[in-house]
Amino acid sequence: MNGAEPRSHRFRLEREADWRRLEGLLGKAERQRASALTEDELIALPLLYTAAISSLSVARATALDRNLITYLEGLAARAYFFVYGTRTRLRERLAQFFRLDWPRAVRSLWRETAVSGLILLTATLAGYALVSRDADWYGSIMPGGMTQGRDPTASTAFLKAALYDAHGRTGLSFFAAFLFTHNAQIAIFAFALGFAFCVPTALLVAQNGLSLGALLALYASRGLGWPLGGWLFIHGVTELFATILAGAAGFRIGWAVMFPGSRSRLEAVAGAGRAAGPVMAGVVIMLVFAGLLEGIGRQLIQVDAVRWSIGGATLVVWLGYFYLPRKGLA
Amino acid sequence: MAPAAAPMTSPFQRRLVTPEGLDLRLVLASAGERASAYLLDLLIMLAALVALTIVAIVSGLGVGSDGQEVLAIIWLLGAFLLRNGYFVIFELGARAATPGKRALGLRVVARDGGRLTAEAIFTRNALRELEIFLPLSLLAGAAFAGDTINAIMVWLGVIWSGGFLLFPLFNRDRLRVGDLVAGTWVVRAPRALLLVDLARDGARDLPKFAFTADQTGAYGVKELEILEDVLRRHDTRSMTLVAERIRAKIGYVQPAGETDPAFLAAFYAALRARLEQRLLFGHRRRDKFDKA
Image (cartoon, rainbow over all chains, first blue to last red; front, side, top):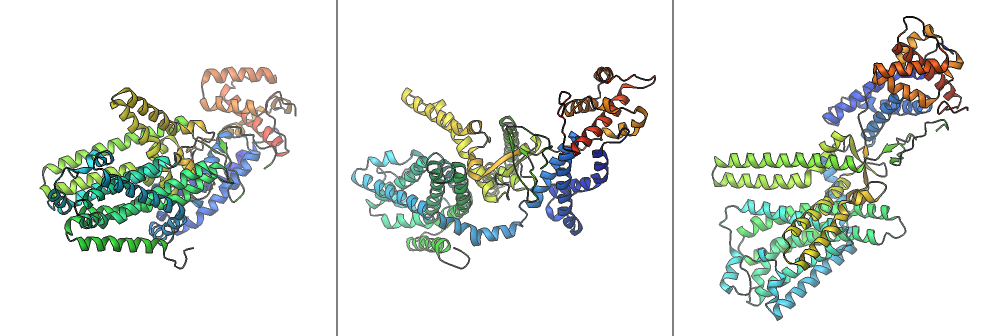
């Protein structure tokens, strides 16, 4: 055997061209996009991948060239992620999200949604009861910046005018954008807080309900309950629903952290994440709508009855979209 | 896999078996690499935000109030997108990595080895609010806390939330809270270059040297790898040193005109050929003390 070259040298010479070709195709697909590959290249890719996998398997067992093995490991992993990775088109992916994934995920969280909704409702009633009995509570419940002069010391005329203030009508789109980014950030935060054993999420949802109840009590005491309802629910139905769902998504994760059941905690939490992820993506979309309704819709529509009916209509739409039984949705 | 396969022992190596039945032996990214990648991304985001702000201000000077509103909206949505979308958009790409991760040679992978879904990417990044934003905002609050009781409460909050930030240090898979919830982890995916095969020149010259079986039998895989490193580094002094030691060990007399690099390259080729030959028969000779 003396004078013979290492087997791995010949092995490499015979296959190197294929590896280089695979590397080139992967580089092209990653730099641009998968659709940049021609039909021939798309057909060749899985074959080259299989060849690289088998090269690596042989090299590990028979070659002692470290650089060769390191190179092949990198190449095989890169090709694996490309061949078995996400390659659905964005449009199909979005269609599937709206048609199936989102409503299905919301349904699967029905228990958490009920709990989250109950917390919001209870907190609203509590806020209402507290402020009706003693108006001093209003100051402790409402965060200072949110009142904008809407407090028990304000005149009824002022409180009423605040409901129909059109913000000068210019700057509405900015207002809508601001409301969306603000609310979405809080919703994402509430979701993330769920990991901390649910409690902070519950507090955030309850805080929302308390302020809502306090505001309702203040306006109801002046006989302005109906117009306030219109002012709130034109966008509030969507926004509160989104808040409830964000809370529910957080609860699912916090619950899995605390009580993983028969699965390992790691698996249970990952499973909860899979269930809650689409719900949260949907929450952001709902908050875009809520921001538009609040920032633009409410300012342009000044009639209480119309505000109420839009609020009611959005409720019907969301409930129907999420919970109406239909084909393909279990 | 054959029992002779190289034993790869790293506490951060994880199995990912492809449908073809091959273990890709992924190696998890270290906490340091993760932190560096994150800082790099933060710098990029900050630069983008500064650029966005400057562009908005400069173009806002020349337009009316309607135009300014549009610019303000663009700025607001741009900042929101930057904060919540930067990681998601880059990780949705074919390389599943942000520019920071790319620079460090990392990528995001689904823990079960399956497809990395958009929901998982969204979830793992939404949890950053808990890991980064919460400790930071509490820390900012601590700086402005007035009386002692308040300050104690806020600092307790900082310590509590700091636990989420340092979470990756307390589990063996280096999972962030976001990774834990989304079912992902971050692995090394460096672009290794295929260098020149060191055996190429050596194998060509082998007939001139004619090493005996005893001579190539003096060493094992470990010595082969050290020799590989010496040849790759190509440092004249260490090559001379190593060549002299090998010649002494195997009793090889240097003929006139033979250079150390040529000798080392040829000996490397001969040693690798022999060790690979034995590997085919199931013997993996670890080092020179291994008599198997």
